[in-house]
Length: 374
Image 1 (spheres, rainbow, N blue to C red):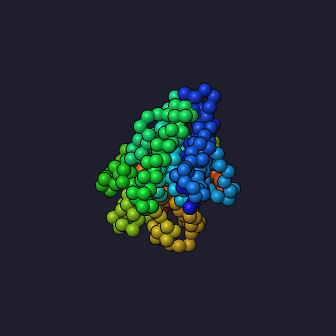
Image 2 (tube, rainbow, N blue to C red; image 1 turned 90 degrees about the vertical axis):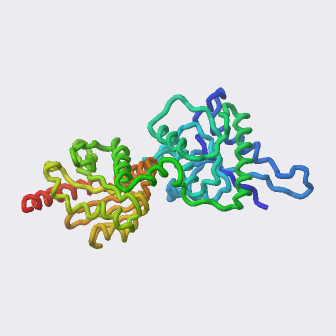
Image 3 (tube, rainbow, N blue to C red; image 1 turned 180 degrees about the horizontal axis):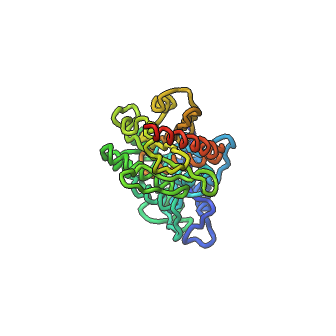
């Protein structure tokens, strides 16, 4: 019989507060070494494999160069039977995509795809706290995740707490008979967003996009125009006017889709606000998924540049210079932040910033002409 596969999600080089000179990564390896030798029936006469087989976090694991961190996380979570997280409140090493750190991604992936697999060992918090760490902590506090009742401050205590957590996880596996839930949008902020009506949810989604864009640009507050923001594109003072929208339910739901409609049809109304600035670029937060076909229907015609990416779908019309970025699965603040971060990272990685700026200049000229003739 195969061993129970356990993925340990943790920081690696971060100090274990309370243990002089030891790291959380060392504690994780001690768990693997000590508990990896355990058998279910130590006195049995038949040949046994160890009860647990451990795989350490992405922070301590190489991954294929052609596999994204998100995909590798999903594969590790899917491949294991239990996700054991050593939680000290730190989001983990920053990803190349700009999204929140590896520990945050690992835990959210487990909650999104297999929440019954996840158990947490609480560690002492470090005093320093970055913005990504605060987002992680707020998200964690909003979830119904089983965790050890007390903080484990040294290696023996961590190993003991891990034993407790694994016992709970094994019992849970037996009770659930191997079944898992897909998605975890019934608790925390995602549940609060679900309880909102369309108007309030759309406002919350737009605000989340504003906050996520704030490190990359400048918010523009205009009376009666709370959907607008400035988003820095390119270098120096080069900026493109960005219009933020939200579809607060599945795109297949007509009323939710009509709240955005075809937003570029109103571009000419913004000429005074834009004041010659390139744009607009339309960023559409979607509460559910977005397909190429759905993006094309919103654009209104298929002859355009259509790119499906981890953040969602990007659409650009090279004739009228219409540009729209659809951000998928904006179910709560962290998922919206991830989508924005992946979009911004994609702009840098493929050099699309300059292309957006060039289209924005031509689009601004075109809508100025349209406004004069309207």
